[in-house]
Length: 127
Image (cartoon, rainbow, N blue to C red; front, side, top):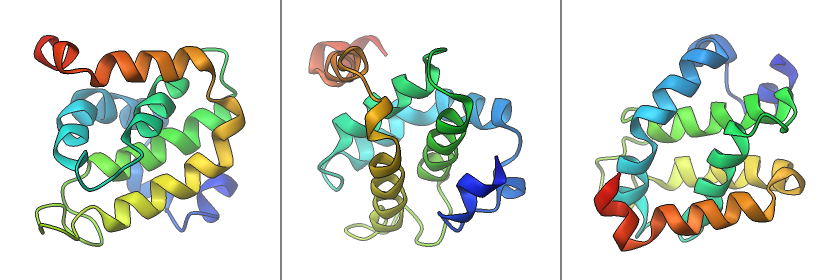
């Protein structure tokens, strides 16, 4: 699976095992998505990719690539720290766009529907 990370310039050892990445992503994805929503215009696609990664029908190499990108997204300290207003999520957006382009064929309508539901204001109050 390391080959899929080489294209992104991400060292898989840095991100840890896939199970650990999934746990980290699950714990922080919606909080970080809300903070980045104004800076990343394709947040619905990001959350759809998250649901795609949780889908058991998604191939493991695709799940791994998505989880690696999402783990980078939820890490508060990365190449450009997320706390820097206006530029903090630019590196995250670049990584996410690259992975989304690679895995777009695996994101199905039900993943997009779940993302829309999760990002509605009513759903935000529940999560």
